[in-house]
Length: 131
Picture (tube, one colour):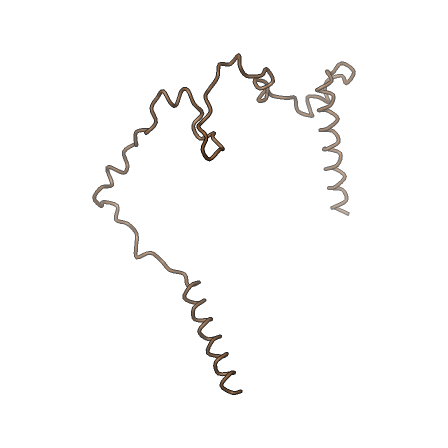
């Protein structure tokens, strides 16, 4: 029975040493010298490996399929109209508050209600947090 305890204690000690070796932090030997050979070549800008034709006709890196190819860039007329309005600036809450609510277009009215609700919720939460 005592031999079993000795074996289990040895196993624990060996495991702790293995974990210590695996988890031990190591440091690099030192900093690279600034004036070492080949530094001038690494500082020079690297030429693009893609041809100009590929850059202008395909969306490089947009492929999500394993065996697929990068999608081609189409003419502007082949894209839907809503795509060109995604980055348009929309009015902020302060601008919407200055305008007359009855004359706002439907989309702006929806945005006003959404932003106003969000602002009221934030204000109520900050009041509750102070109490």
